[in-house]
Amino acid sequence: VRLTAPHDEVTDEKRVTRADGRRVLEIDGRPAYEAYRAWSGLGGALPEPAAACAPLSLLAGTTLHPLGVPHKDARGRACYRLLHPSHAVPLAGLTPSGEGHGLELFARAEPGDRLVVMHTRSRDTLARAAGEAVRLAVPAATLERAAGALVVYCGGCAMGIGAERLPVAIGQLAEGLRGAPFATQFTLGEMGPCAFVGVEGEERRVADEQCNLMLNLLVFGSEPQERASAV
Image (cartoon, rainbow, N blue to C red; front, side, top):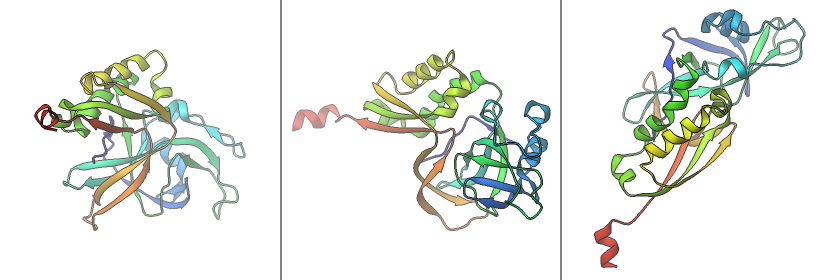
């Protein structure tokens, strides 16, 4: 199983220094939202919340620029567990200083996690990436015998590319699955089995991981013709 994402890594890396469940409170000792705005290069493209505002939605600006936790998969290839920032939240009462804003995510982050910012070039790139994800994740021999598939397509990606580009993504899925029929659902938060080692070579682990902005596939194979004839 491989984690794939249509995003390119931003080279500099930071660490989560304070977190609470799905909220990253500080990155490298700074309020997480303010750190993300500067670090991602988005700056003025993201809203600047008032000091004591209610949680502020970020979905319109972060789908193309999520956070990524770097890993290596079971074969030693680079992969990333994506974390999608959904809101900026005031830190009053959540950190000793209470100043600034944290990031609320659709998946958990832990203190000490390494983070990068991931970028994709455009919404069109994100829409076209579905077919490539199928080709990377599913062996060609399996696709040749595919009888059908269940597809979990991230709702955040669907909203990010917009209704006008969704037929492009569905067409890419159909092409990647070589015409096999499939059913799709759009979810906010995806879970699936991952086998990977950390970037510093920690012990390999296989677990169900919750990620964001992901495409999950369950492909059903058909019997090879010669075996079916013999039964």
